[in-house]
Amino acid sequence: MESKARQRALEVARIQNGENILEVARGSGLSFVEILKRNPDGWVDGIDVSLKMVEKAEKRISKTGQKNYSLQLRDCRCLPFEDKTFDVIMNQYLLDILPVEDFIPVLPEFKRVLKDGGRVILTNMTKGER
Image: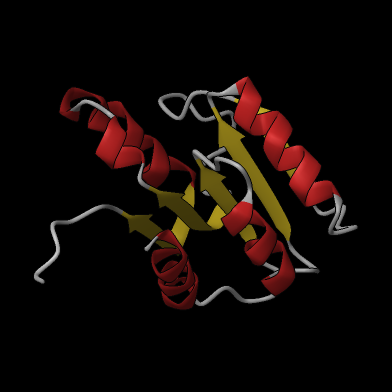
């Protein structure tokens, strides 16, 4: 199920080579690797609050040979980036695990660091129809 959602999110993101991309709550790095493949001449930042996930992702991502990325141990409620930095912000399942009261300040932070005309791709769980 996650594989289909991940692929669909990447399709919807329409990543163009050369963009600045942020993946929030990056987890083990599965999507991050795919983002790097689509953006070899751009830059990709990834943040997560779990040291274990940062280490796991670094291990997976280092195998790609790509050097155009940064992984950080950070909280998404206070992003360490300048205003209007990113063309694309991607996230999978963060809003499913955060308490509703934490949506603010997270969503305003996404807006702050997103370039005008940028794209936010949020993947969330929903109850299936079948």
